[in-house]
Length: 92
Length: 92
Length: 92
Length: 92
Image 1 (cartoon, rainbow over the protein chains, first blue to last red):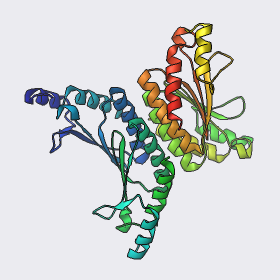
Image 2 (tube, rainbow over the protein chains, first blue to last red):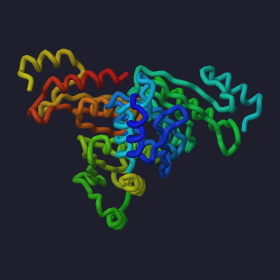
Image 3 (cartoon, chains in turn green, cyan, orange, blue):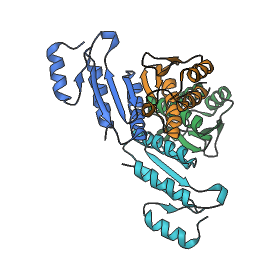
Image 4 (cartoon, each protein chain N blue to C red):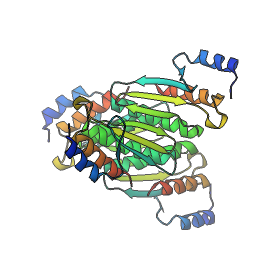
């Protein structure tokens, strides 16, 4: 699990993500419509499975919310930020 | 929006679904793994878009939670049960 | 089935598509990688199913080839160009 | 690349797959409809990307054809059969 200063450094690199009340790395994405949202989710799914690290996904119509945490570590780890970076790269 | 007796009749046909505290038609599905869960979600996405009626989707690893409601009607309508039936048919 | 002048008029609107030897409306798409290609295909799948009109899909890694025709009509119809337009719109 | 006797031994374990004229490991899958076919393809896509080994995919409506080969090796390798086994497991 990242310590406070490591976490602050990582968060500085991900300005569009925030920490949820439970300390999860969170971001909401908006799309033109549901189809665009789900195509994005498909890319997220593939990236997540490749890392064997899966976000909490919420989707309603054109909105996708993702929350990342490392359950085994009881908090955020480098793996969460690796996944966040790959997700960013899929959000064209 | 369905009245109480219509709703009771529909719910009787969907014994694996329940009403959430906010009155949404809800069901959780479990799969062998994330890939199986996401393949199911892909079928749900296609069915939802065909009906132009989209569930609230939650997914964490092998669990998928779906909540259905008709926002325009302020509650459950026949359309929610139509979608629920199509979702059921995709859950092999 | 479109006659020759209708077909020529439609083809003029789709300069990136061509007619295959068998007269199908064809286009190849290239992506950064497989994941991007498959996310696009997911959007194509949803659009196709909504129109109940399905392309011939070929995919190898980052390349997607689509061929459209209307089997019932024995050739190209307006529906093929409707689907082509929707596919174009998903190719960001 | 597998030699002839290794190949014969593997093929014996995959009775539903055949060798295409170009020596690719091939199988056609049929589904109830397009949506079921595409849900399966989504699982195949995830498995393929995890192995970084991608089949040639063809899909028309409810039919999916997959051809596997290892381009770098100029023929079939153990990796093709690993992917085939994972694809089989997704075909419920």
